[in-house]
Image 1 (tube, one colour):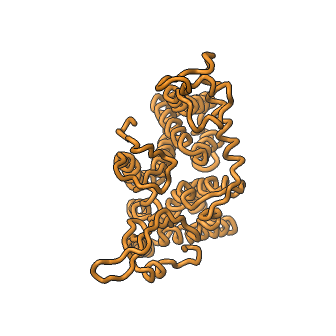
Image 2 (cartoon, helix red, strand yellow; image 1 turned 135 degrees about the vertical axis):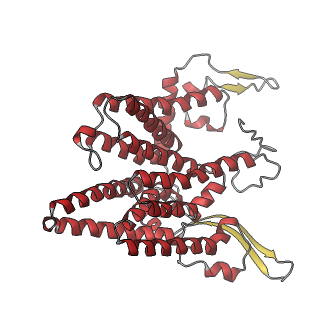
Image 3 (tube, helix red, strand yellow; image 1 turned 120 degrees about the vertical axis):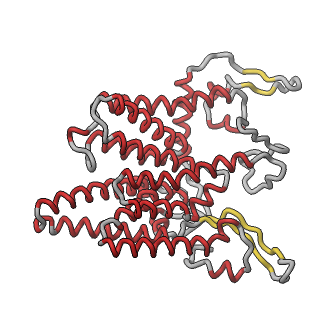
Length: 416
């Protein structure tokens, strides 16, 4: 309602697939699109902050720009583009934070920014915990990038934790201030809470009453809502036709069908044509990322096996590269971990936060190649990614194609 959203004839968010004609929905799509457009420059900025070369950083942005999955999520009224923006900014702020001096004013500034954006990401989806979790581990233990004298002090870590908690709680406070009437979600909350909401009086017209005038502390409501959110997620056992497993995301094995419009007749040719929006990642991006992850693991094993054969200078250079690559690899694994450990319905769009680390790792690996090989490889990847985007664009924008043309794009058996 802040941005002018006005449901027509009772249309609400739970009416999935219903026609939006006459509903003021454009502004909601613009919000998603604006956040999605920010991801492209953020990818370049983040890659440069990691020390990745300019040309390889361009490849990072290129992966974001032409990723079919990210484009679809940014074009529709979905929250994943917002999630990714907050994740990227929080990680970038952390990289800036780790370069500051202890107890300096500028460090305090970056602590607040890092904590705030990490909390914003967590406020959208709990699965974003991998980002603030990785930042917290590195800030406290210095597992990869930080030396002992660069670690955050106990007081600085506490400042970050308190700032993040307050930011997270703030949005719930706004929520409770605005949700004063009874609704369809009452069943998720205890009666002690729902009794304080306004209910429609069955004995009069247009009058709302409360069953109880008892005041409830915000912290009580906050804890109960989060407990119910956890319980609901834990008990979610319903399976879905379009669900997929985490190991299938890595290979782009299974997508999600968002929209179909079959049996349209072309006025010029008279042939039947179909429209559909099918969520998959850009194959050139996801398969290149998979190859880069495998090569990174092999490179680490090789480096460990022959670490005694290098001179001190080479060891120092390799160690610096190893540290950057490892934080990206661990970030990638941490984002997959919830879906590895918990058996529940999940979909390929849950791969997006982890895919960010995979794309950064891809461009990081390109920098390890000899210069002439690197430039040739980047040129080839830029071309393949763009060509793949053009080929699967009909599944992004619901462009009409014949049934045989759609079938030709179903490269994998589960893209049906």
